[in-house]
Image (spheres, helix red, strand yellow):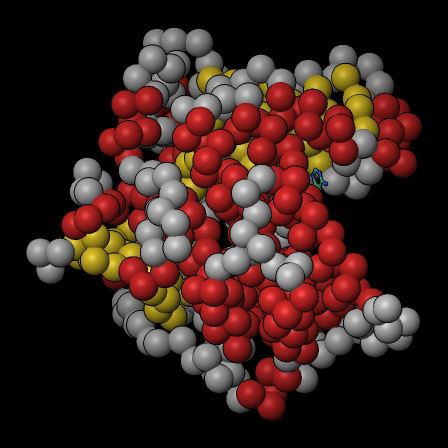
Length: 422
Ligand code: NAD
Ligand code: MG
């Protein structure tokens, strides 16, 4: 597998030297850092808003974008004092306009408006859209030279090679908001990648950790949506229950850190306190710890390389008491194996996997397929794409989105109640 761009704190810190930093306590020496929030009405978007408001003048918000909820987007635009609000759903334009009447916030709607939000003048763009819907606007921000704080892991799973190439070409940074990658990024320190033996991402194990395969197979959306440690959007919550999320994250780590699959590992750690570990060639291991609160990695990325003082949850190890670790069980959680196989196989299979999984998760949430069919549908889509040449390494975002579209169509047409694919 090809090596891509390596992201390490020292490179990024250097690249930030001439930018307006965001020092702790709001003691600003320079202009506030301008932020765009893509996916502002979601779980990460709202946590980002909390961090921004709590930092008291350290940040300004240049634009916000959301999917379909015009009222929620208008509320967050007013709350953050954003001059521009973009809704992806064109049908919501009038609602958004009405909800923003008298606020002075400019309203726009449609996919192009979201790209326009991504391109508003800013120092940092938070990529917090869910799914491959985030690829085009997030990529536009990267291409325009913005620092991107990336929560939207599907961008890298769908179009990792193009994202990393573009980051390198435009001299921009992708800062990892995903808690495990953020922990690894911090734990990596000044080390050379050659000195890294293993990067380990932890998984909480989700709500079905102690369940039998039979019980998991028949799990309902309500059961799968009841995550023990994190409160997140529906798609990622289902991915956590199947452990597909950890598979997507290993793929994300492969691209963002430029590490081959053999040096990426997963451990189940139900307390969600140790988020990522880096084992070095001399036997040392550094770990990133924090309470399970996304405001921690969001604040780290927004202020990087400085540190903010936040109201995020504090870690109390004595109260946690015990930290436990176990190997993931691929038999009960086949989605993780399917994702790791896709990464090792390459040839665009991560793109296929991501698209198939989005359709499968949607179908499960709509009660059209059983929980255990998520992994089998995704695996079948990977096999089919290898068989007929749909799977190929996407060099550009356009190629990745072509594969994404073809796979979505095929998986949709294979769902129960749909006409068979021709
Ligand atoms: P969410 O469903 O709560 O929010 C998604 C946001 O994207 C919403 O604001 C929605 O309106 C918006 N959106 C959807 N389609 C859009 C489009 N086409 N254009 C613009 N906006 C659109 O999801 P979330 O839990 O906040 O997760 C967001 C991303 O962050 C996902 O990729 C997820 O995997 C990742 N992530 C989330 C967490 C978490 O704790 N929630 C942790 C790590 C990574
Ligand atoms: Mg994560």
